[in-house]
Image (cartoon, rainbow, N blue to C red; front, side, top):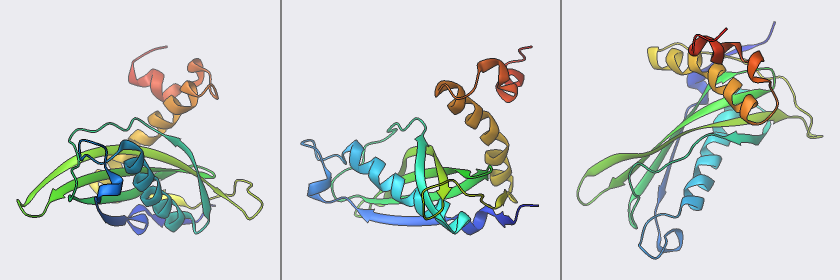
Length: 172
């Protein structure tokens, strides 16, 4: 039986200040810099869950719902949603805060997948993720569908084998 670990133990709260070197010519945070920060926060979360070295396996849709401006404080919150044999899905929320005006908006949300590896770079088993709160359970329940979609889109699973996706659309 796999070791179990609550997903709350993987929670990461990372804060950064948007400086001139992080922005484009319109003084907005560059998308690549945002993805870099998201990858770091998510990797730390996956490492906390697995107690292992992790590598990024996939990144789901990352879109900006609100711009992040020069001088904003960016808060990234990451937490493992579910683990499989050696992989873990991590959910990330990104918030942008303008300290002088006191406004705070959610700017990004994404799912990253990481694989735990040993010192030789081979995949290694990770603890089972235990969801406890209503939100954790909601994210946990959707993780298998998101995983199957990633595998189908990546050509690693045949669509007819994606039972969770088929059930979602009532396909037989």
